[in-house]
Length: 206
Length: 163
Image (cartoon, rainbow over all chains, first blue to last red; front, side, top):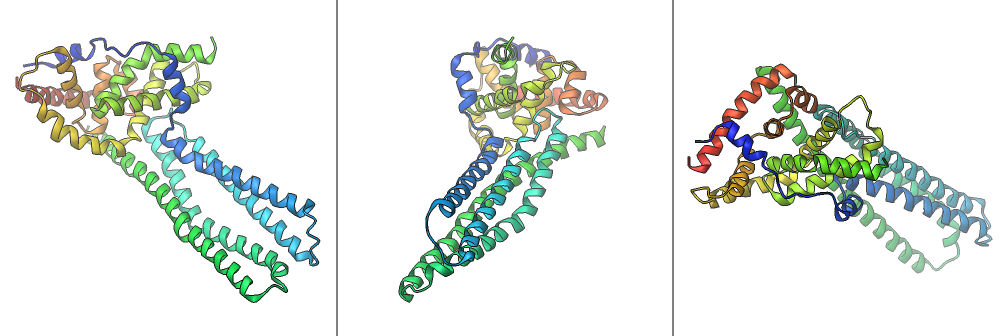
């Protein structure tokens, strides 16, 4: 029969974990934590949208398209602005995740994740629909002049392919990503809530 | 001392203890290694924010506890294996010290999450004041809790070791 002190002696036996080496230091830069996995898509999305906006702006300025109507350029400007606003929004989300402090007490750590999760839930409700509607309105304005005088069949084929891609991106890709993020966050929150529940239960018992 | 030297010192000083905490928490060597790495990534990323009025030990262990707690999801599946398979496969008689330690890790991983963290810190001989600071539980409540967990862990261990 072992008593607790015997278990403690057993626990305190030295292990073969060894000293820090280059491999471990390299792994610090290569390993992705849960937080990083949430941050990465936001940062990459922000960068991609900024690059898109810059490319469209360059096309509008130096593309020599010689559009007749001002609103065609207006459509391009709108697309740039929508991309930049969305990029700013994604960057702000990235900063919010980054700001979650891993060094505070577990209950405070949970509260930060909860606050972030609540914010994301609110954002997810309006951000994607608003982004897609505005982007497509801007695209429609841009396309008016492009489609003018073109064969109806070609226009219909283009609109069909474009609409199919947008619907796929919105209803499949977009929702899949949101669901994945939602599940990941909800998992963290639910189980951290359980932990805090354990802590609180003990506090109440004592 | 630059950041890398400081980090190396911290890893050498606390790496083993954190690894044990992760092993006790998960009961799984591979997952514990992942958690150890995640903990030290967070240590590396937050080192600049460390204030000298706190203790490195408290600060690092708190990061480790938060890292363990946010990895519950992955661990749940492993827990089923531990309970249903690993312990069942252990020999009736524990022959070597290494097996004894492995059994101890498995037994700790059967406790509720917060209790795993607390008992691991007790086994590491952390003062109650520091454990309270790491977990955010008041010292008075911690004493009551620790007394109960010690008893519980000893019972689990003895029942599995067949003693």
